[in-house]
View 1 (tube, rainbow, N blue to C red):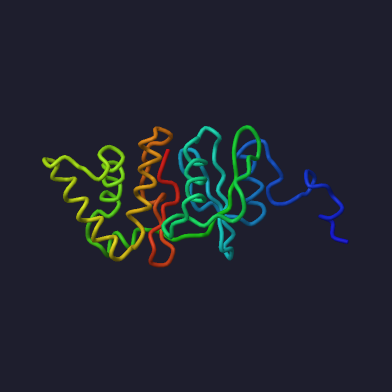
View 2: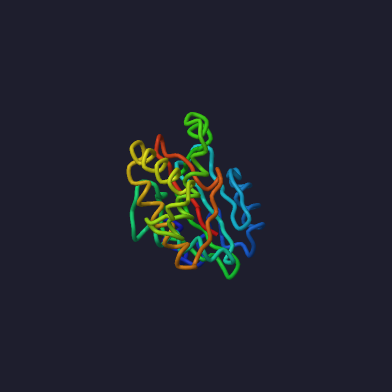
Length: 197
């Protein structure tokens, strides 16, 4: 009989045994062979070098991220991350969730020769404010709409992903938060990892 079958679920010991703070969790994870591969205002991301997934710890004060996770589960899209298991509230201070390991967006940005991140952000912001009807006098709106239409040809489904994120922003449950750490790559596919705050 395995030890996990003997010990009750609340007593199972693993690499993250409900430490009281994210800082204490970090210490446990680093001792268990994880490396910190990302951080932000509300979150830290850890991975073992040979793993195909990462562990994201994020503060309960980040109320937008759980809404983003739930939205991605309810609206599957190739441009949303693949989560492994469910989001777990570790305690009253922070959550943990496992998701696929992705790579940096920087190479794609350099290869395109234009501000792909800025175009996506402007499109999401514009869609949240204007829907599909940008003011005719808005030159940037026309430019962004054309850029996203071009991007859709190489990244099918990205317009729909942007529209869904825009709905979160328009509903007032989230603000936009795009930077190279929140927009990553799965092979040649752009993936929004945490586009809201």
